[in-house]
Length: 229
Ligand code: URA
Image 1 (cartoon, protein in one colour):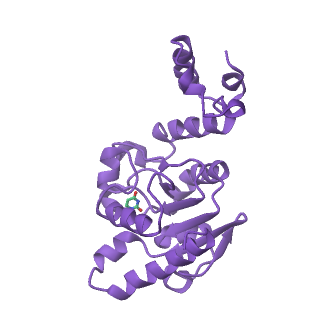
Image 2: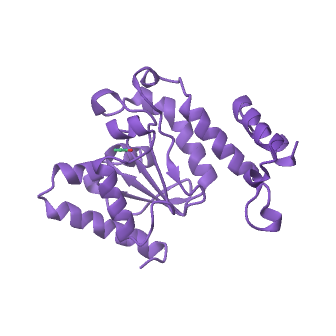
């Protein structure tokens, strides 16, 4: 068994799956470009293992009503991390974050920032859809937050964009409300956090161009910080 398989913190299912690939001779699974990066590193294994754990999570009642848990997607070494509230209907059906109307708008915003969706990582505070898209409860957030913490620890982004009030509250618990804190830099475990309005809020208030302008203003600060402007 390769060193990387022995060292990583693997769930039995993922371990079995990786061993199977190895038996087949599918060494490409463990190869990543250049010589000393040739093996799948421990963090990558932890990341895959974490995504798998989220997909089969039973920590709260949302597990009973969801179709798919949605761990997140994108570049696991992204310098920019977007965090929303919780999956909606489309996300629940597809098992992918921000793929509905709000997702289309978020994708536009990301592109306008000179990034691609593949370059950033996109996830939510809560990984399963609350019935009828209600706001996640405190209990649900408390059950789910270790996943987001571990994702952040592994991704090590330079900037986190908190989309909407639930995400903003997660990173800035003392926050008086998204209206007051948006557009201002905050810090979470040494990482710069920019709270802004949620894309769904922009969609619900489509005629309000001022809100859109504010989000764009916030994103320009992010671009500046990441040298994309
Ligand atoms: N709204 C969110 O907060 N997250 C999604 O993934 C989709 C819509």
